Amino acid sequence: MKRDLISINDLSREEIEGFFDIADCLKRDNARFGNILSGKSLALIFQKPSNRTRVSFEVGMYQLGGHVVYLGPGEINLGVRESIKDVAKTLSRYVNGIVLRTFAHKNVIELAGYADVPVINGLSDFSHPCQGLADIYTVKEKLGKTQGITFAYVGDGNNVCNSLLFACSKSGIHINVATPKGHEPDKGVLAAARRAAKLARCKVNLFNDPFSAVKGADVIYTDVWASMGQEKEAIKRRKIFKKFQLNKKLASLANKNVLIMHCLPAHRGEEITDDVIDGPNSVVFDQAENRLHVQKAILIKLLKGDK
Ligand code: CP
Ligand code: NVA
Image (cartoon, rainbow, N blue to C red; front, side, top):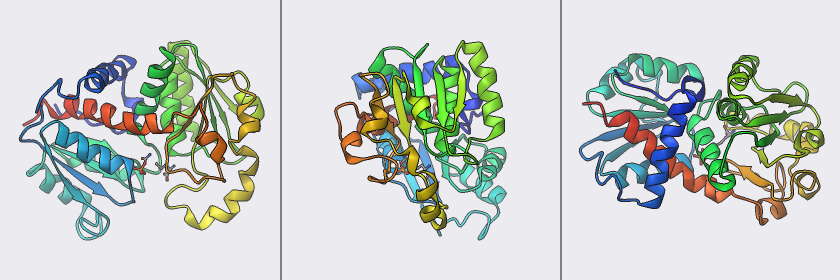
C-alpha cells in the first residue's frame, strides 16, 4: 500500500517522531543510509516558484542516490493540457514518487487518489506539511523537547499556520495564533488541532492581539502577509497586518531566549524586521537546512517500500 504525505493531520505523533529519528541520523551522518534510493526517480510538479522546497528535494534525492525530474509551471499544465487523473496515471509508470506544489489543495488530493506512487504535498493554499515538520524538528533540536513549550504564530492564518497547528498540537506544543479579525486559520483545522491537543495535553489559543499571544512564548513564528497567489491583495494586507509585525518590541515580550522562526521567503520590513530576522535568536536558516534532512527522511519512508 503506497503512503502519501498530504497533511500533517494524517500522521500520528509516532510517525512524526519516526521521521525525526531518521532525520537525526542523516543530519549526523549524511552517508548513513548510503544510496538507499538508487534507481528511484521523483517528479516535482511545481505550479508556483520555489527556492527551498525545490532545491532541498533535488539535493535530497541526489544525496540518497536517486534522481529528480523537475516539471515547472507551463510544462505539465496540470488539469489544463491534461487531466490530473491522466497525469497521475502516466507519471506513475515512470517515477517512484511525485511532489506537487499547487494552488488548490484538492489538486493534491486528486493527484494522490489516482497515482499509484506516493504523492507529497510540496505546498498548497491549504497546507505546507514538509515545512511544518521541519519546523517542529527545528524546535525539538533547539529546545531539546516539544512537550509543554509555548509556540506563538503571529500574522496570517494561512497554509503554513495550518500545518503548524497540526504539527504543534500533535507534538504536545501549546500554540497561540494571533491574526487580524477575518484572517484566522481554517475552522476545520482549528477543530482538528484542538482534538489532537487534548490527546497530547496541550492547548490551542486564538488571539487578535499579537502582544498577548507572545507573552511567555518559547518560539515566535511569522510568515508573509500575502502568500503566493495573493499578490493583488498585498497593499491592502500591509495595512491590515501592520500591528502584527515581528519586531524587537514584540519579541521583547516573549521569553528571553525565544526562538525566532520564519519559513522564508521573508518580506523584510513587512512581517519581520531586519534586526529580528538577523538577530541572535533567529533560527530561520536552521529551519531551511532542516527541510533537507526531514524531507530525506520522508523520502526514505515513502519511497523505499515501492516498486
Ligand atoms: N519555505 C519554502 O517552502 O520556501 P520555497 O517557497 O522557496 O520553497
Ligand atoms: N505562505 C507562503 C509560504 C511560502 C513558503 C506562501 O504560500 O506563499
